[in-house]
Length: 389
Length: 132
Ligand SMILES: [Zn+2]
Image 1 (spheres, rainbow over the protein chains, first blue to last red):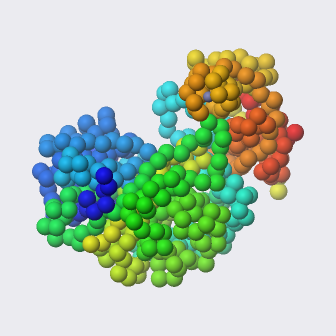
Image 2 (cartoon, rainbow over the protein chains, first blue to last red):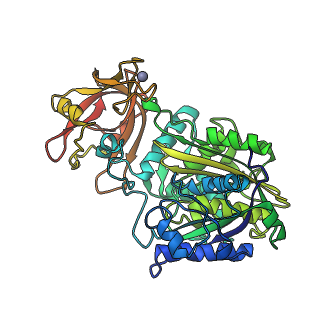
Image 3 (tube, rainbow over the protein chains, first blue to last red):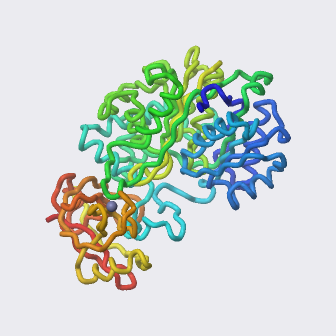
């Protein structure tokens, strides 16, 4: 069975807030759900599949489904692979629709890490009995240094430079200046990235994504339903997912899970990286983008630095426009999980609804890629390929 | 520029069925992991079942010698800078650790290192690495 053209993204909504001290996480989820259903032209009563991950408060989907008032559910999925989970949700929703398990799937994400004072230099939340914790916590792994270790190794193996990584932030900022909701709207230069404080070698402050409140939601539907709605039809063509860890101690930081999830998605979609007109690439840190671009095959392994340099990711300038909303680096990283905003901006591009300054002309084929968890130890990877019908 | 190593407080370690022997050995200045009794491979971090074949495993000692696979000096996650690293041991496994007792700004990938032990609250000795 394939999911190719078996399901469509009919609704997409990104919450405009970036700081929400007066709202609860559940309320943000609900506001996102309402926005995505309204965007699709559907209602609460149409939803028979619900998807959420660890940012949803309570026990799995139980509490959120009840809060939202979802009474027609016949398919539930709470796959959690960190920030990549929401791309997996879209894929799993397409599988469920293709298998007849649901017709209208709702995916929600929301969180308030900014209001709650979270940051990338705090220890990653872990639960009791997590088996790797006793072996790693004494060494103070935090989010940023578990990406920095991958960046340092990439520089050592391939000669990648901080200047090249900085170009990724420069491209994101060039896009964010056109997004009125973006947290950081000022264009930046390579020099400004390099002059920003060193957080964990070789990652500077401006190599890191923002910490923002907010959220997003998606509605995935059966093609027959999408056909009678008033929005442009976005088909799901292919998807891939995997988890990469430390390989029993044979640690290899030169590749990410995208090297596995990417080829699976391309094969199912029947397209190649050269066909992709727009790419949403998870940008928790600049190195995350560079690694995924290589692993997805947009350039050869080790050549990511040269690929991203000189504005190659800037819409209207380079060959691969990326994260035209400003991405996690500048726009929004709600719940410290950026996966859903990656899909949302890809949908905007395919509908022709991105900001005119960053809209890719006649965008018919787009990719969204997520890496959730820690690039340097354990992460989930998900790749999604979509087309405008 | 220099960034000297500074001692930082280490929280008590987790002692449970998976880790107790390791911490007992560490107090003696010994580094160990587990080896599979079926396929013979050593792995890291130590597990009761082999991550390569699901065979049973047993404790085995390690030389404590290796090279830095990657290193990052974390300068702004708290008041004290520290060097987090992956060290590739001569036995063929790579573990997450800290590099200590040196000027962090001189650290390089590929550098030879050897194990040393630093005290945590509660009396455990935590293996770390210093330039060999
Ligand atoms: Zn084995």
